[in-house]
Image 1 (tube, helix red, strand yellow):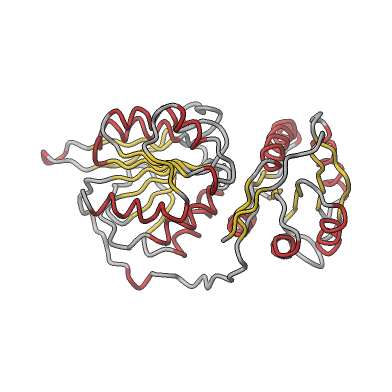
Image 2: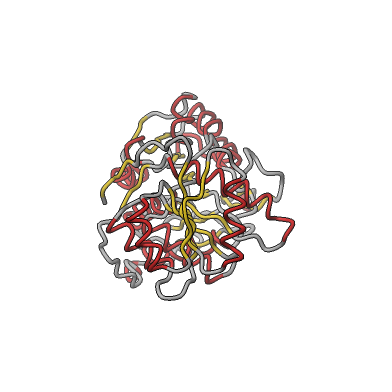
Length: 362
């Protein structure tokens, strides 16, 4: 995988809209041009036109629909990343199929995605989110796959063994946002099935999309990966993805004088504007696991995770952050580093080995 640093935006961020629906193109144009720093330079009604206009117009960011005639969004993304890499924000439907394809797009190099509004009342919120993500995308550092077509055939599944309800003493909490799904695909599949630790993944995503993320990571990994459910017990070799729309809390039962660690879902208010919040999970995990906790803060905008990582480190946890050179958006790692919570900045390619080393040496 190679890293592409996209140039600084011009006076205004030049956006190409790609959608087969005239209605959606007009709505997207209104949304984007409500922001003073964004201008829509053109529109494309299908994938073939989109690829041609990317090459001829040289936009700063492309907003791309998934399902289109002639050439679908994934094919457009693949061609664009080969011929003229640029930041892409997917505009995706909130359906099971839409969320699955969105995960594939993020894996292929799309910077972020915005769910399409399901009602007229949500349009202003979606417009604000879309503009924010386009601005962030224009500053993104792309990690472009060298089009190695993954053989997504249950990689590592044959290595699995049943974990039962084995007690866990070590926990890894991974926090990520923009660029996170692609980064997670560089980490989780490179961990062994018999990792002697549980993993919690807090990725900023809405409901529905986290389930698709968990399924995709599970398909690629030797570890078992699933979306967390209320009162799931933490087990070695199992990674739980915090479901969108909930904070994932951690606690310990008091049964049989020993107890087990488990998670529960919290529908409380968003923290830092997100739910799940990495901070919420880390405050629990740090107080329970102390020196047996490893915190990994990956690429993403904002500062979620900085306070929780600092508190966890004070309690004895090991805290690492993805370095700037390999981050799509160096926001969350930077905030953690500047707050004093981060011990070490680590390139993405080295994070899996750092996690494995920590877990096997407890």
